[in-house]
Image (cartoon, rainbow, N blue to C red; front, side, top):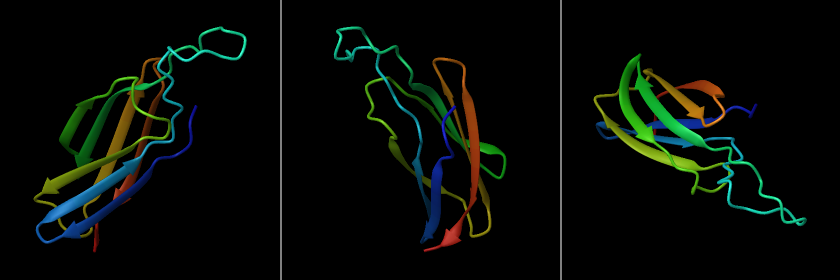
Length: 105
């Protein structure tokens, strides 16, 4: 299992800027070890971002993204104090959810 995501959610005018760094190895299954064996695929496949329990973003992710990827989203209709919840599911069935509160920039 991986560690917690780093989530920063700040208001910029009437839009919440949400940045998420997912702590994940993101192995594509195409990289080889020194002995020539393939490193098994292990990557995020799906990510959702919810604001106060309402899904705002649902993204399909591929294995071609680098380790510990950084994602950025802009969400209208948020306000300071709202709760942001981010969930990912990977190709091994692992799942992680972390939360943050929207703050003023």
